[in-house]
Image: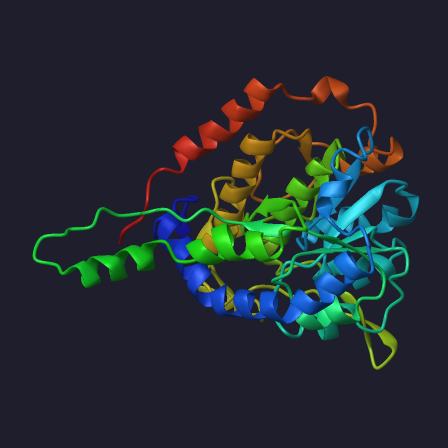
Length: 361
C-alpha cells in the first residue's frame, strides 16, 4: 500500500536543487532587506551578535533540542524541572513557554514573511536569544528586541551531472553549468563578503533541528539530547499539539491524525499533502522527513557531538535515552554511553550505505 523503506524517489542532489530554486529569491531578498539593520546592530551599535563569539563558551553544559513530533509529549510535563538550556524552532517557542520553560535559544531558519507574526509576536522573550541569519524573515529580525546570535548559511554548490558538450554552443554549456551550481555566487561569494563581520557559517542542513545541533555543538554544549525529533508520524499523529496565543488568550490545538488507509478504509482527518512511506522501523514518514534524517546523520558524522535521541520516531542510529532520566540527572552522568569518533562515523556510514538505493519508479 505504501512505499517501504527510506530510499529516495529522486537523488539528494535533485532534491537540494529543488529546495534552492524554491527558496533562493526569498533568501536573497531577505539578505538585502536585513542588511542595514544588522550593520547598525553589529557595527554602529557594537552589539556582539556573532556566533563566532560563542565558540566553545558552554563546554560541559548539556542542552535539549526539540522538534514537533508527538514524542515531545514526554518532555512537556518535565519542562519546569529542566535546569539546562533548550534550543527550539520558532514554531515551538510558544508551546514551551505555555508549559513552563521559556526557551533559551529560539532558532529562526525560515525566510517566510509571516514567521514573526505567526510564532513570536505577543510574547515575553526577554530571557530568550534569537538564533538566526541575514536571510531569515525581515520582520522577525526588525521587531525582535532581545538578544540575537547571527550566523551565515553555508552551502557548497557543485556539478552534479556530466555535461554532454557535443554539438552544444558555449552559451548552452554555460547555461547548464549555472543551472547545476545554483546559489554558488550567493552562498560562496556575495553573502560571505557583504556580511564578513558576522564571521561564522553553519552548513545548511535542511531543517531547524539539524542546524541547531551544529550551533549548539559549536557553542560547546554537550551532551545534546533530542526530544520530539521524530522525523515521522508514530500512530499516524501529525505532530504534538501546539499552544499559542490567539487575540491575547492561550489556545491549544487538538490532536490531529493523518488521513491514511487502514484495513481497506480511509481513516484520519488531516491530509498530509505528501506521499506517505513507511520507514525502516515501521514509522510513517515522507521523503522530506527521511531526507532530514539523512542530513542529521551527515551533521553527526561531520561534527561528532555526543548526541542522544530521546524521541520515538524514525531515528534508530543514535544512542537512546529516556528523557525522564535525562531531566532527573539534568543531562549529566551518561559518559558510559558516549561514542568515540570512530563509532560515530561508523554508525553514520552504515546508514548512508543502506540508503544508497534510489527509487526510480
